[in-house]
Image 1 (cartoon, one colour):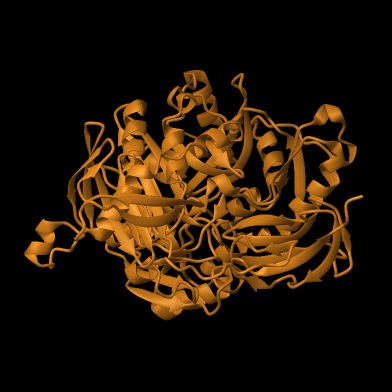
Image 2 (image 1 turned 180 degrees about the vertical axis):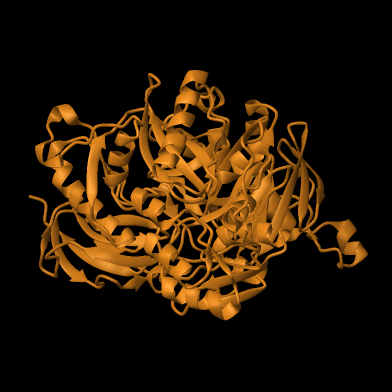
Length: 634
């Protein structure tokens, strides 16, 4: 038995914070590593000690295994936990940790290596008798093979994945997927397999010790995905017949035994609409969605990882599961704008209710451009699935999140959607319903009135006569304020007391109570610089004050392509230069921000008259990237 004393987490954000929580409970000292943008991050503040990794980009910091091992030795750590992402599935890093005399909290390097390539893993699983989708050779693909799914062989998280429905688009999709995979994982290998329409993403959590015991900890459904990245996960996977559950558990254990697995891992399957399961991949690490399994089995998987690494034996069988758990990933992104990631200051993050919140942020922190835009994972556990779904939706609906656009409203609407409520889950959910889930925003009128009343309300330190006498000498005349929200300008005319259909019951700078059509409503208001945030049971709204004398708007040249977000230019179309002829919709640049790649397209057919960026260049939101002069209409 090894007796660990100090743990370095080779990761960041909510991942490191979550692992530190368990380490402290077990009496271990904690060591963080951080890039320069993360110098004041929550995981750094949370650790007993922290070591700087100079630089900002992941390639210079969290992917530098040599610097991380040096940090562990310098800080006196005797173990390294890789978390998930970055180096968590890097067999060479695991070997280097062991060679440095440190304990590796993960599977043996040989097991990581065996599963590192999806193509090699599939052959290994075929030998073990695990069901597989037959691969398709892109060079000989025919219309009968469509649609195809292109996947990076060396990584996951949706990077290097493309769905191809037209053979004429296959070569372009292969090149794009290979380039993205090479950028993300250092390996451009891409393979193709049939794309299963309306399939379900179902996985099995496994845990194995060094004494031959392998647990299959039930199933999880992770079908609700955007850009092949999971959004809502739950355990157990609903609606699966028991024979299918047993097949999945048996196949997962076979996969683990085939590579002499140790520690925590996940075996992922695609389940077709008619109930046929196919092996997708094995993640040789802990998963983002592990809390739903922890809730259902009443286990701490990180604690079990540490105990297995120390040499402890698992009981012969896992505990019996109880109830149902659902997890939602709260992202700083705008689903209505192509899931565009958001950056900036997070003024408020408060989520009520009896839910578990795993986060790497607190109020006042800044969400930057370099890493994933997930703010928090919110998990609800209850005796039944409907109760868990209801609890999670209610907690998210009541959350106060100020400063950034998020997917919170999308999550609430997803959880309350009839298909989700009925357990009718598949990976095409957002393809079918995104417009409905992001449309019809709550009416901002009552919230705008509340914002205006809160702004005009005297504070608690105002003279008593002012607080009792209203906010204006001429009480018969309305006051006017102007705001913008969601791109629309609103003018609010209000009296301190009476409005059509609305009665003002109370108003302070932080809380306005209105009676609307006979129903009493409370509006919580927070002011921050030029923004006003209003939260109520009717929805959340952000209002920007319109200045009385606005500055003239900056004008840009027609055809200007502006950066839709801060990020890094990772590709420029081959041969693109001033004077190049371009066609409408042609990809000109590829911009990467927060682990997502975004194409910048030509707005019209014409001539590229200016190109202001190059590969590797970082740009700010709104930066001028290029200019296309539209060709004259005949």
